[in-house]
Amino acid sequence: MLLLSDHEIDLCLFDAYGTLFDVTAAAAEKQSELGDQWQALSSLWRTKQIEYTWLRSLMGAHVDFWQVTGDALDFAMDTLGMENPRLREELMMLYRQLSAYPEVKGVLAKLREDGARAAILSNGSPEMLASAVKNAGIEEYLEDVLSVESVGIFKVHASVYQLAVDRLGVPADRICFFSSNGWDVAGASHFGYRVVWVNRFGQKKERVPHEIDAEIASLDELERVLVRK
Image (cartoon, rainbow, N blue to C red; front, side, top):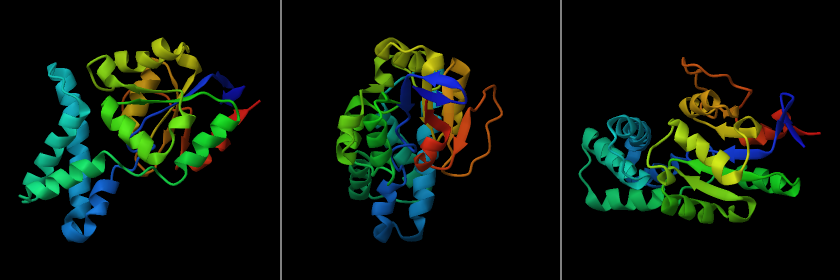
């Protein structure tokens, strides 16, 4: 049995982008071409990507995450004065194969070794997630990879978090959700999950209703907060 702050946990559920997969990896791969603009591009690309998921959800104008990612990249490149169709295509292809953070495979392998259930719940499209999971070599450690495309709206809509409850048959309060995104942690907590904030970037807590069960700087610290009884 796994325990998080004395709460029994039946499923470890992971966000994908920023939590398991490094969202800066695509731009970093092109650092030699982008020069000192690579970090600005990466940051703006990610910011607009997230903003567009919220805007489209509120507007009722859903498209899949691949389209959102491309739209966000177009905005970022336009803002930074980059007009380069070849570079744009190469960055998009690199995003399909984002690197996992160094500790991810080992952490998931240890959970599997301990008999724990693990899955992904992500804004990503099924195709994007399948590519990233395969590239990281972590398929064997995951029971399922859940995409918001099943419900046609992005996080933090409650129907997204309900997916794991319905598909994996685990009550919300026995799911431990891991995300590096403070807004995602807030949404999951408000829904009813137990949550661990993987605060890789030293962010401040969001000022919306939610409770955090534990905060760690990377998944290397998972065993400190999620213990086997």
